[in-house]
Image (cartoon, rainbow, N blue to C red; front, side, top):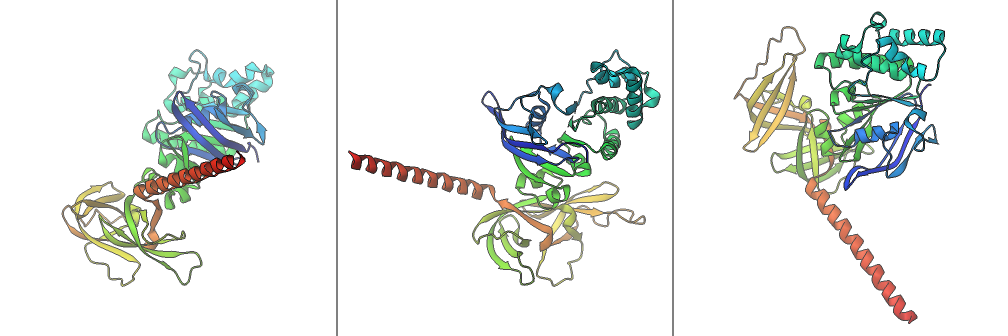
Length: 408
């Protein structure tokens, strides 16, 4: 397989007093399409610039195939970067823009022309070879930038939000093309984006970042279905997220490592959720369920299963989008639950549930997910840990003083 393994080892970066990256460690496998996903200011572009050699970390290491690259200049690293703003030479033709890296290394003319034609064919721009950048669309400009970045055959391609300047339809089309290019050439792609759908659509693995920290690394399915924190659950798609107290934990008899947990959610009531992580009674935890897992109906569900959570409410807002309708359902004075109903059949002309309808919402305990300690519980845990550390430190200091006194 082509490409390089990339190891990011405890990388931290400060800009003055602002901490852009906090001890970030990641392992990216050879040939992967790996995405760094997070909101603006989370540190993903800073991390990409460190990989490219445009920034240096304050601590930590970066290795390509086990070799340290931090001492190498950007042009000496086996990586090229595709930027958001294309960075094309406006006075050069498409052909010459793509040929530029080969001219720098004085590639023989015949070999240069052959390789440029190959890469223009790869990005489907053979017929535009003699145009200038100002004669191209945004998508075509980005394809030129990709071809130029690939032509000297790097082992890693770094992509810094390359599609963010394009309109929605063109962005989706370019994303498919980018994935096809990756499949054809097979090198390691590291892709920075704030768009969840982009990352979910093309990535082998995703690292979700916030405030300089990596919160979770996993496949798109793992990130979406099993978010590690409330932030990940909220940031990846839409979700219903609540805090509640653990009332009871029961080990499921047919499962070796699965538990049925009963939560008391002040804004909602009692719900049941399964988890593979053992939780303690009395703990405050965050719980999430995706809107598409919440079934909405006018009739009360007929099932008698104890693992089905059911609530009544009133439709506060229905939003019809053609292929689906999203319902905001008010279940009490302070709580809205989102439910999504898909329209999968041709003769389903529209939703049979409308504004102000009384409805039932239901979902299986298996469809919810505990995403960790509630924020106030996490703060209490941190405070307890800090106090414990202070106690240990104080005890250690007292012991040292006694020992010093004994020596005297």
